[in-house]
Image 1 (tube, one colour):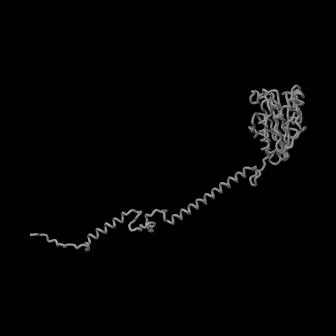
Image 2 (cartoon, rainbow, N blue to C red):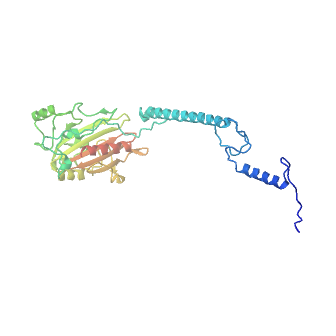
Image 3 (cartoon, rainbow, N blue to C red):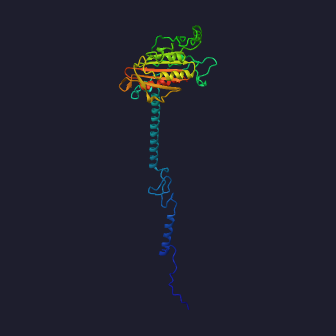
Length: 344
């Protein structure tokens, strides 16, 4: 006898309704299938070519068909070319401005001109040729100068007017303190015919050459055997009067003795009284040594006269600048420095 009391549901007719359990299972399977559908083709999306789900969160910006992305790209391209054109224009204008600024002198440009501090515009400085077989002073242990002494003087600066007893340079040293020091006129004339013109002139080794007021110090020109003297002078546009002298001696020792003596000369024919410029120790010179004296008289904060004595090897130099309105310190430094460089 059977003990199974489970009700028999009976046969199910084809096409008939399914049980609730089967329906729930089928619905769950469909939901899982939709959840794992690929992002590029979500379940229920319109798969018609050219179509796309407007509210699809997985859609890639900028894909074909995305009109907003295309418009954004167009705007970016347009902005890129606008910025590029602006940068290119700035570069071209900047380069043109730089060229325009560098072509003229700085002092000719409005707003960039600097006040003149008194320095001169000299032509290109050139040294006279050396005699055949001779060397430059730096190559000699005794620092002997063999070039034409007149050619070792500074030329006239731009705008200055030359001063002196002769407009044309003389061809031979005259009136030297040492009778046998001067070359013969014929020999000097022959040499000058083959040499380029020089800027200075020969002057006698005397009181006038030293710009001295008396003979108290000029005696050293004889005792130290001055072999020749050359002079140069000018008046600048600002009224400053310059006097340059070079004295050559037989040796470096004689030149050094003369230099030490004339440093004590406190007055010249153009300067009534002067004193040693203590601050000028270590004054900038190219070679040798220098002693600077300032006039006691001043115009404002400037001295009306300044004197510089130079010595290098067998040559002693004198630089004197005077101006009733005061001598520019920068101009004086410039002349002293350049004149010492000519002796190198």
